[in-house]
Length: 441
Image (cartoon, rainbow, N blue to C red):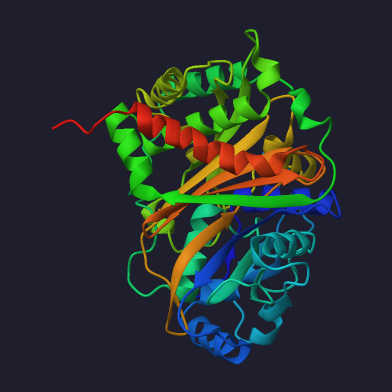
């Protein structure tokens, strides 16, 4: 395997991290592992075996000399350096697989505090940018393993691929991906311009946010049956993603109910959209764009909330074009001449511009492969979405694994009562399930 170019998304998140020292973005997943307890030596031996067959997990940033280009794309006399992902043959597994104590409390509260503490520690970009933590000291049965990686190297699809490379037991690698994206048509550019113009209107600022985002990230999550989500979607003739977004709107409404006693403009979520193709499923990089979507928190009826979300997502997808233009211009092997570090950092932080969006709502989909760690089955998977610490109030993600779906709410510590949002989301899901009625024959 040879070195390879960074995608525009990789460059953008890397530029943000470098432009704002101390601010970094990580993605991750908490794995619940069944069977007998796992010790550190067994976990390291398992990872060492996998790395021999997974060179993508050994990639690190590597500088190479390259001729610069002026604003017209022409070469010049002096040389510059460009960054590439280059595999290493000498990865020290001990540096990447460590034991971390759950020191504060036991059970879920102590576990969340340990994850919050680890979220304040940046991933080292001077070596392959991922870590595995064997968590010790909790009261849960079995073994808990936390995977963390730099967002400059991995988006949600790459996170699933990394988990498959480390722990996958079969050939299923994740969600279904398209073979290719069509070439953009003039109408696709017009639709993108229309969405961008709509994004100029400010989103609503909730008093419940407690002012500007401050403090470190706080993680809470809830688990439900994946089939329950699918049944609600079928009975309401919508998608699982529509159900997910509508229940976020309902949870936020209940959380800030006093602010919705009369009609107000909606709050908006940034919904990441994958522009990855099947040919790129093995690459640990960023192939993601985003679209702003209104969350109808002002609508008191849960079914009408769901219908309004579904109508909006259908309009976005109608006629195709969603992600087509971005695919043409963002999944590039080389940076365009205008892509300064300032421009790239600004593009990466789109989810943190609170005038435009109130939160990020990610849905990487259902991980189809079965995972195991040193012969022990992974029985649960909780995804951990990134948060722009000190800039962003909330980031939500829905991960599916096995028979379950896990919704994680990552919030800034300054947001009052953020820990109630997962239960409010689950309650909204229960209301939609009751209102769906019996399954038609």
